[in-house]
Length: 335
Ligand code: AQP
Image (tube, rainbow, N blue to C red):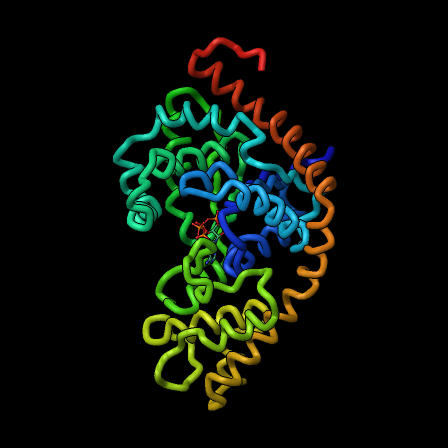
């Protein structure tokens, strides 16, 4: 008898160019987990609509992100790769979950507060409801594990609360998901403002390293990265947040410990440190980038992957959605 693997669900919004933070905080961990788990990786395209997107750019970015997932090592033969908008079960479950989520809970979400400040002229209902759609994304597949960066932890806690509430009323319908937060790289900070998270939609492109930045661009961005007025390379998040962030990136891209790096760069100054980090990142990303351009050129293949991923995902999501319909007393749907 073969035991089924636990289910894992994760995704990234195609709302900009993926950064090295998405790589360390999300995709590199997915790659490691894909053997152990039964994985579904989505393009969280519906989530991007909570902020105004340029339609042509969004479409291109969906393909960019899919090609990046694969180029980084996600195997489309072993995992379900799909677009959130292709599987209607997500939004159907989200509506039902809306009726089991309290306004007070959503009001506490820090991402909503932050994004409302960033987009004052477009504080739409979708932005407020984002965590409920995220809960549906996860619960509709019975996901056991959800790899997330630090910033998504609160949303996952809400997902668990809503699932427990629903189960306490209707029985064991939903699996209660566990987060996976990587021990290192779960919150890569902005290069110019190292107390703020590195984000792909940052208006200042010098705040992030995009996975597809040119080699020269990576060198320039790191050269300009904020450190501090001293010259000591030491990991101290409070006193030296910029240096601590760069040390984290260095450790992740070279598989050395922070202590080894502190030792190796003792007395060498920021210039050499940043230079070496730039070269380490360039080398680390090189194979992925070469693979990316090959994949991105084959749009038919990318569309095939999404088509087959959507079919599999929809068939799987249907099972839990049907149980939810039965539980709350909706007429069984012909689907
Ligand atoms: N800087 C980061 N460090 C570590 N992990 C990160 N993640 C994002 N930025 C970092 C993790 O990547 C996953 C998918 O993120 P997302 O794009 O769906 O949403 P986000 O967290 O809102 O990312 P951005 O770049 O900040 O998006 P925009 O700028 O479009 O709002 C998540 O697991 C996230 O934690």
